[in-house]
Image 1 (cartoon, rainbow, N blue to C red):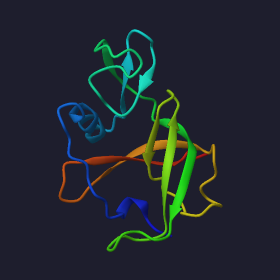
Image 2: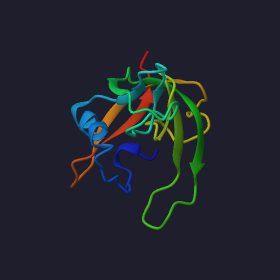
Image 3: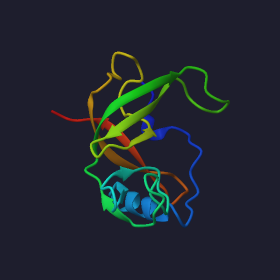
Image 4: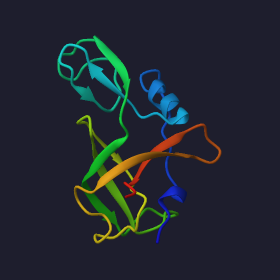
Length: 139
Protein backbone atom coordinates (compact mmCIF):
# COMPACT_ATOMS: atom_id res chain seq x y z
CA UNK A 1 0.00 0.00 0.00
CA UNK A 2 1.26 3.47 -0.88
CA UNK A 3 1.25 5.71 2.19
CA UNK A 4 -0.42 8.97 1.09
CA UNK A 5 0.98 10.71 4.16
CA UNK A 6 4.52 10.27 2.83
CA UNK A 7 3.89 11.13 -0.85
CA UNK A 8 6.40 13.39 -2.49
CA UNK A 9 4.40 16.49 -3.43
CA UNK A 10 4.82 19.82 -5.12
CA UNK A 11 3.86 22.18 -2.30
CA UNK A 12 1.70 25.28 -2.58
CA UNK A 13 3.08 28.75 -2.03
CA UNK A 14 0.66 30.76 0.12
CA UNK A 15 -0.45 34.13 -1.24
CA UNK A 16 -2.13 36.98 0.64
CA UNK A 17 -5.48 35.58 -0.57
CA UNK A 18 -4.77 32.03 0.65
CA UNK A 19 -2.62 32.62 3.76
CA UNK A 20 -5.62 32.35 6.11
CA UNK A 21 -6.42 28.89 4.68
CA UNK A 22 -2.87 27.59 5.24
CA UNK A 23 -2.72 29.16 8.73
CA UNK A 24 -5.95 27.31 9.56
CA UNK A 25 -4.53 24.01 8.29
CA UNK A 26 -1.49 24.49 10.50
CA UNK A 27 -3.84 24.90 13.51
CA UNK A 28 -5.90 21.85 12.47
CA UNK A 29 -8.84 23.85 11.11
CA UNK A 30 -10.26 23.45 7.62
CA UNK A 31 -11.35 26.97 6.67
CA UNK A 32 -13.80 27.87 3.95
CA UNK A 33 -15.17 31.18 2.84
CA UNK A 34 -18.87 32.01 2.68
CA UNK A 35 -20.62 34.64 0.66
CA UNK A 36 -22.58 36.73 3.18
CA UNK A 37 -25.06 37.78 0.49
CA UNK A 38 -26.04 34.22 -0.56
CA UNK A 39 -24.92 32.12 2.42
CA UNK A 40 -23.04 29.78 0.05
CA UNK A 41 -19.63 28.34 0.89
CA UNK A 42 -16.83 28.25 -1.66
CA UNK A 43 -13.35 26.90 -2.27
CA UNK A 44 -10.59 27.68 -3.22
CA UNK A 45 -10.00 30.87 -1.24
CA UNK A 46 -10.40 34.21 -3.01
CA UNK A 47 -11.17 37.73 -1.86
CA UNK A 48 -14.57 37.92 -3.61
CA UNK A 49 -17.67 35.78 -3.89
CA UNK A 50 -17.81 33.61 -7.02
CA UNK A 51 -21.60 33.92 -6.79
CA UNK A 52 -21.99 37.71 -6.64
CA UNK A 53 -18.53 39.21 -7.24
CA UNK A 54 -18.90 41.03 -3.91
CA UNK A 55 -16.22 41.22 -1.24
CA UNK A 56 -18.94 40.70 1.39
CA UNK A 57 -17.44 37.36 2.47
CA UNK A 58 -16.42 35.70 5.72
CA UNK A 59 -14.02 32.93 6.74
CA UNK A 60 -15.63 30.05 8.64
CA UNK A 61 -14.41 26.78 10.12
CA UNK A 62 -15.72 23.80 8.15
CA UNK A 63 -16.90 20.57 9.73
CA UNK A 64 -14.04 18.62 8.14
CA UNK A 65 -16.47 15.97 6.93
CA UNK A 66 -17.27 15.05 3.36
CA UNK A 67 -17.67 12.22 0.91
CA UNK A 68 -15.63 10.86 -1.97
CA UNK A 69 -17.12 12.49 -5.04
CA UNK A 70 -14.70 11.24 -7.71
CA UNK A 71 -11.16 9.98 -8.21
CA UNK A 72 -8.62 8.70 -10.70
CA UNK A 73 -5.80 6.34 -9.83
CA UNK A 74 -2.54 7.52 -11.33
CA UNK A 75 -0.48 4.53 -12.45
CA UNK A 76 2.16 6.56 -14.32
CA UNK A 77 3.38 9.42 -12.13
CA UNK A 78 6.16 11.83 -13.06
CA UNK A 79 9.74 10.72 -12.42
CA UNK A 80 10.53 10.55 -8.72
CA UNK A 81 6.91 10.00 -7.60
CA UNK A 82 5.34 6.74 -6.35
CA UNK A 83 2.47 4.90 -7.98
CA UNK A 84 -0.32 4.07 -7.73
CA UNK A 85 -2.02 6.96 -6.00
CA UNK A 86 -5.53 8.33 -6.08
CA UNK A 87 -6.17 11.91 -7.08
CA UNK A 88 -9.45 12.45 -5.30
CA UNK A 89 -12.23 15.01 -5.28
CA UNK A 90 -13.98 15.30 -1.92
CA UNK A 91 -17.33 17.03 -1.65
CA UNK A 92 -17.38 18.77 1.71
CA UNK A 93 -20.45 18.67 3.95
CA UNK A 94 -20.79 22.43 3.34
CA UNK A 95 -20.95 21.91 -0.45
CA UNK A 96 -17.62 22.90 -2.04
CA UNK A 97 -15.37 20.27 -3.57
CA UNK A 98 -11.63 20.05 -3.13
CA UNK A 99 -8.90 17.96 -4.75
CA UNK A 100 -6.88 15.94 -2.26
CA UNK A 101 -5.72 12.45 -1.36
CA UNK A 102 -7.53 9.82 0.70
CA UNK A 103 -5.49 7.77 3.17
CA UNK A 104 -6.51 4.20 2.34
CA UNK A 105 -5.47 1.54 -0.16
CA UNK A 106 -5.17 3.21 -3.54
CA UNK A 107 -7.49 0.76 -5.31
CA UNK A 108 -11.02 0.92 -6.72
CA UNK A 109 -12.10 -1.52 -3.99
CA UNK A 110 -10.96 0.87 -1.24
CA UNK A 111 -11.82 4.21 -2.90
CA UNK A 112 -15.59 3.78 -2.82
CA UNK A 113 -17.62 6.65 -4.23
CA UNK A 114 -19.78 8.44 -1.64
CA UNK A 115 -17.86 6.92 1.29
CA UNK A 116 -17.83 9.23 4.32
CA UNK A 117 -14.51 10.97 4.95
CA UNK A 118 -12.91 13.18 7.57
CA UNK A 119 -10.04 15.62 7.25
CA UNK A 120 -6.67 15.40 8.92
CA UNK A 121 -3.63 17.61 8.46
CA UNK A 122 -0.23 16.31 7.41
CA UNK A 123 2.83 18.48 8.12
CA UNK A 124 5.23 18.58 5.17
CA UNK A 125 8.94 18.07 5.80
CA UNK A 126 11.11 21.15 5.42
CA UNK A 127 8.03 23.35 5.01
CA UNK A 128 5.53 25.31 7.08
CA UNK A 129 2.65 23.75 5.10
CA UNK A 130 0.18 21.30 6.64
CA UNK A 131 -1.84 19.67 3.86
CA UNK A 132 -5.49 18.77 4.35
CA UNK A 133 -5.85 15.07 3.55
CA UNK A 134 -8.84 12.81 4.11
CA UNK A 135 -9.42 9.35 5.54
CA UNK A 136 -12.46 7.11 5.78
CA UNK A 137 -14.58 7.90 8.84
CA UNK A 138 -13.80 5.41 11.58
CA UNK A 139 -16.82 3.47 12.73
